[in-house]
Length: 86
Image (cartoon, rainbow, N blue to C red; front, side, top):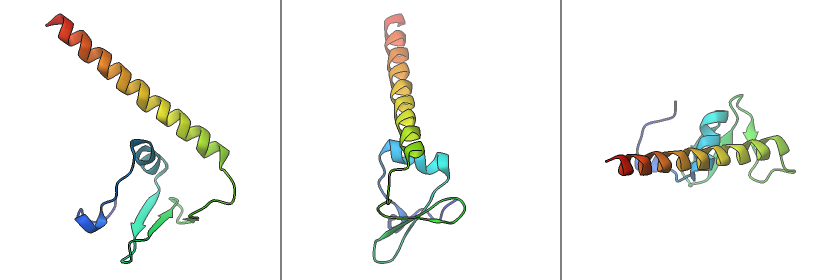
């Protein structure tokens, strides 16, 4: 999925948005002028500014962020347990 890995294709996403892009299957593309286009898996364009909040996506994003935070917390606890056992 995606194009060649090269500097002109890279973009910086926070972890939460990175998860959303991969979980939802969004397609990100950058034009030669640097502008970004976002499409849903069915090819429909995601507007730069949605006319209204997609409540389902907003709730899903909150749960995704909470899951990431919990995974980090669990990993840190496991690391601390390993240090104590050593």
